[in-house]
Image (cartoon, rainbow, N blue to C red; front, side, top):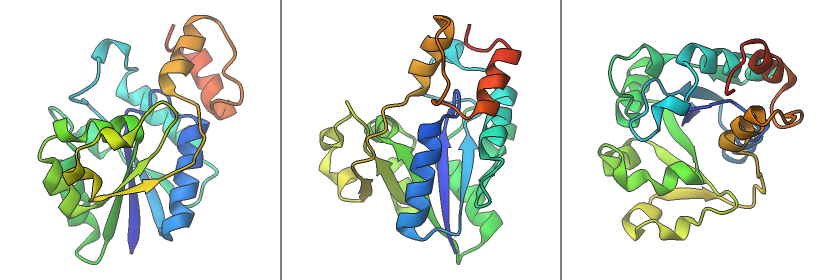
Length: 193
């Protein structure tokens, strides 16, 4: 069984995340993709991140119509800092030795890979799929990482969670950037203001 693990802050989940997941699911013939919102990410500014319960709920709303997409709160439940290596090892215990994992990350996250905990071990445990994004050149990654990464090119998705948060703060519309249920949830809970 081939399973995608889509890690990230998802602050908030947006249509770009869904488009990436659909493309990777089909391109690699995955059985499903599990979205894993980070609980306590080591490389993010904590003051700009919505509470984990909100990020989890927004993902559940965004994925409601997608049969082969799931959400896992594995990192949110874990105490302390969330490390990808620990998550992959936990997923191996859950799904067994026959599962082949594809860890999916945006170019911004992939560029930071050398700073992750034991990145070369991560690359041994899972196939690392880096999705290219405008303004992020993965050619900057050292060769020892690049040679072990599967690159998904030409997504031409120019949606980012940081831009969505900025638009919310400025009172601008986020329609068509996030699923409508997520847009309503953000408004109802006055997130990112």
